[in-house]
Length: 443
Image 1: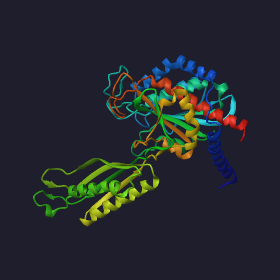
Image 2: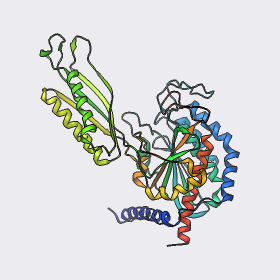
Image 3: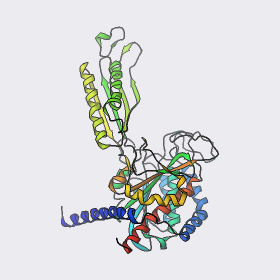
Image 4: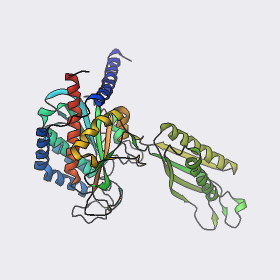
């Protein structure tokens, strides 16, 4: 390690440790601060003046959805708007990502906001006039809304440079839903390509639409979303006539026995107070009803909040697969890919930002979030720096029940967009302002 590289690395570590220390102190002494009334009015006015343009952008993205690592048109639309604001814009980050930097007029830390841009391979079944024009592709997870809120936040904060103590980095990320097979992508690749550096980011904010009542936000400190792993198992036997099973090795029978045994990991080997899920969602094998199948393959997912439990489940799975197949003198292959880790809201950052949400929305609209078994690759950012991730209610009060995420009928109420912009603006300004006050009034 060269001296220059060593000092650069140590500087980053000191910066991040210092930021966490500041969070701890701020959580103790500055938890009541919020954006002043004049600034709040400026935020409202800027949202009102630009809302129709942001809605048009959202509808354009919804009509032209693009899959992971293929968000070319979406990225061009986002970059064009950010460039029109005269921000420092980089394109082509992690393939199709866009990153913009807004420098405030006063010195301070840098914080970031992340929005994801990719869609899902789902045929849209809604009746909205701006439904998807791309067959078999749809924004069924609300990333079009996330992108619109991210752009809207940039538009609004750009009018408030005089109020910004530090800088704001806007991260528009591809491939949150997972890169295509054989490709890298998403948050992990964004980080590898330096999105949290130059300048170094001290904290990051993000949100996700949630099919719950409009006007509510949901969050909690600590782990709020699970890690997400993928596995595939192939049981290899020997084919024979269905009437003479003794001459073959029935892969279907052994696969069934293996699957039942795998389910006992969660029910009998994991502490009930340590949430975990093992789901097998796909199975295929065999060629004809009267032929013993020589191979069966099944695939599934594992979800946990605990890295020790995560690794333990993986080990126990292979032990069961190996033991079951070997007892019948059969072979197997076992593939296991670790995906996103669990999303972790930094407790001190959550502590100092929750008063912002309560004063902005009213305490009755800030709901505690029980840990969810869904996954989000925002988790990769949370592993590097303090993160704050919330869920934004998007269910219209005019409907009793809303279609879930990843449904072909999922469509959020667009009234969530100005609310999401306002929430993000207040969170970012409060975070930077509290850091500035701490420097002026050290404790």
